[in-house]
Length: 452
Image (cartoon, rainbow, N blue to C red; front, side, top):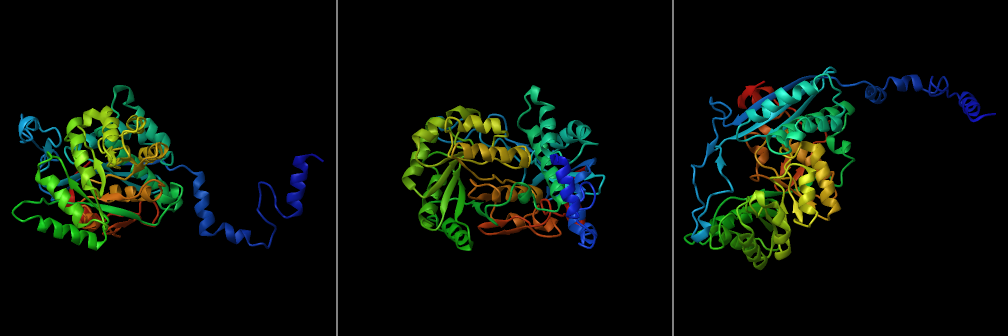
């Protein structure tokens, strides 16, 4: 008797028929076949054809100006205003947005009625990202199987790869599409995105808050100290402060006084936003070494000076963090291969979405680095995607909450039917299928500026 004959005979003897029923009559399999779980599993055999790709520009507070209306750029020749050589062109933050938040939501629909929501980081001129999606990505997506998330990511990335569009608006647009596709896939199989990513290492992720306020000699620092201590008492164990000026600035004085005030209860991270040359960054880093209680020194160097991060990391004991301005795993590889950072902070809405951020987290792990999602202005898909990936990563200790009250901001829970669970010091990803984000139509319409 050959192997095939043996198997067929054994199956028949036990009531199991190959290619027919699973068990013999009377065993309940007919009833089981009609169960929701079996029906859900059977859906995995049919494609999810993409039928629509929509972009929605949102703004808060909303006004009637065009999407590029809030953009404000420093006048030509604007300098940092410091003494001596510190009074040079302002390279760190040349653009502002007149007190508003903007983003591009991406809504992808399928022939089975499933809808996925994604988001692009797009505070300055959101029509750039929306146009890339509509003119370049949409024709490549319509008719495709939405379950092919990774393959579609590569297709869209490659569409401009030869032209060097591997960062900026192209990757931000790609992030929005990718997040939406993961949302669809999670809804299709009925599980949260974190489970699609292989499960979680923890149920919730610690969060740190970006802190604003400056010490002055007049008030002896007490107002900012009081506010910092209140935030720590509420549950935060890390606060991030700006440090973009020289060693004699009020900013460094603020870091000193708050680091001391919350010592043994919380750590202080500092963010230079690309303000320093190498020699300045080394000097500032050594000041931070003396202060102690510093979690990390973030984006210390001018963004174009990436190759010098290893020199900074070698010269300073405080942990070096970089990556907000980077977009792909290749760029993070170049940063980490020579040990240029101890921690990286890619941004979900900039760095190609969940697919590429996941790869970046792996590369960081390979080089013994931690990673923490950078969270700037943005709404629920951006936040939820960051939360899902964070709890699914072994080397992610925390993530950013931009102002400590992100869930209550104009792009936060007020736009949703079910709120995101974000409390001081903690964020818990939704345990609902996909991202777990469902917009309230009326609330979303109230911040919508343009739909394509």
